[in-house]
Length: 367
Image 1 (cartoon, rainbow, N blue to C red):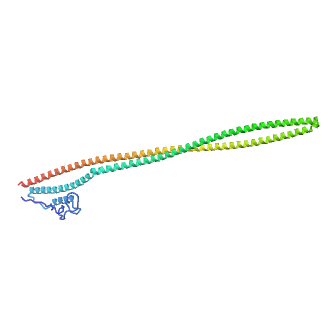
Image 2 (cartoon, rainbow, N blue to C red; image 1 turned 90 degrees about the horizontal axis):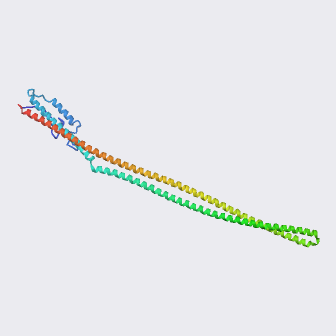
């Protein structure tokens, strides 16, 4: 039995496009060897269209042999389907190789662990930086507390100086009281001396009156009158001397009192100034203590915030790692499902080709 077929097959050493005699491309694709030449228009789709065109417009078949023509058509179609299936399988194999390579890279446990370790290391570095910042804040707080202790010590020293000044002021006050008592004693003595001088003066006056009386009574007692005058002059001189000594004593006492008052006033002023300085130092120390406590609290809050942020980033990194693991598992499942579907399609297409070939063989054996 004769048959007419259209030869659309090509040599394995030439391009798979019908009628092209160029060798296949030497470009590396990472999968099956290329089946077409370097011409970009020669590929599986254009080759299929060219074969369909040749099959449609091929040489005329004998009208008196429809079964033979049908068998030839079946064989030609089976051959083309086999070629298309091979090309499709090659493309699917290339895609599967690329997908497997990407999946291997994506599912590389070592790379995933390295990335996770890098995230953990970054988290650890952030925690170390936060701890260092907290330690620095603590050191600054300790320095401030030391300075506050020094300020308090100086304030205590100022208070002690104020107490010493108060003691000196008390001593000066006691000395002033003693001086005042001495002045009162001197004044009392002066008063007594003045009283005695006045008494002497009165006696002198009485003597003068007696002398006058004696003079009036008897002029011959002139000598006695002269003695009385002399006594009166002596009494006057003594009274004047007593008055002079009293005045000098009073002046000395008043000078001592003035100096004592000035010294007491100076002591009071120095004590007041020392008290003011001590109060100012205590107030400044209290303000610095408050500021230091506020800065320490702020530093602790900042350190806690940094630690919380670092923990949040670590949690986010762990969540991203979990998401990556889930995506990797999903990709594996999708890849397995796609491979299974491709295998099923290939098996179905192989069964169809086998059935077509079987039908073609049966038609060849029929009379």
